[in-house]
Amino acid sequence: MDTRTPAKYQPNDFDLKVSEVVVFNAEGQKLHGYFSPTANGAYVMLQHGFKANRGHMLEEAKILQDAGFGVLVTSIRAHDLNDGNQITFGVKEVHDIAAWHSYLVNEQGLKKGKLGLLGNSMGAAIALEYAALNQDVAAVVAVSAFSSLQDTINVSVEYFTGLPAFPFAPMISYWAQIILGMDVEQVNATKAAAMLCNTPLLIMQGGEDIVVLVESGQWIFDAACGDKELWFEEQLGHAKFDTQKPDEFKRRVVAFFNNTLL
Image 1 (tube, rainbow, N blue to C red):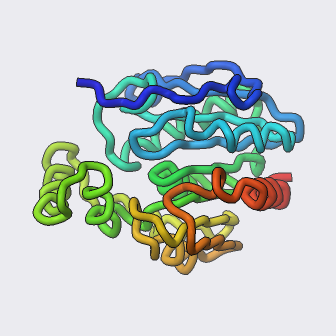
Image 2 (tube, rainbow, N blue to C red):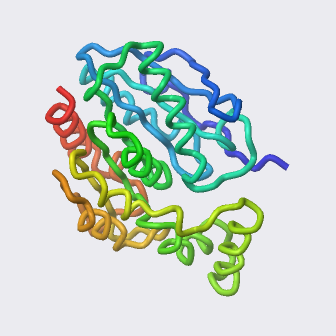
């Protein structure tokens, strides 16, 4: 049974001018995205979170498009309209981001130093992981990223499944290792941030987050070794910056990418 959530919003709802694009990852899986060309020479890829879809990133895409950036609203395996049925929380999904990155380079002429990533939740953690693997990423905005899968699994299992953390969190860790062939220790955005000494980071974390540990933003910030900024809002929940602090979100994100990509 497919439990994917259909997109609630479409580009027209935000007057976002984009075209539908398709790429294939290294495993041959078909991935769907939205693209618009750049007016200032730089691009930002926007990645949704766990069990979400492209519709969750359209407001952010509109902000960046209006500021002159090319936008690529990406999606990953086992989400949206894409192939695949296994979610590995970033272990394999970084290969999907690589496919989208290659699209910008090979099809749109992306130049070195002109790519930013913006991700929500799991998408933010994946953005950090991919940036640590590819130094061509020039800047990252991480909104409500989990510091590591192990850190947040006790919090997330209750939120996403309605089941108590114990004994189900240890069972999920075991399932990940046996069924998915991955170790939860492989997913660690804090360690990724520690490798990004030449990649500026803007990290956002809300104090009322019930999906990831509230400390996640601070831990990622502390680990980061390059230019970095932490925007912490005590009264905000998970990935609520764009909807509950829209003016400040727009100002901070546009200024960050203007300073790092232009």
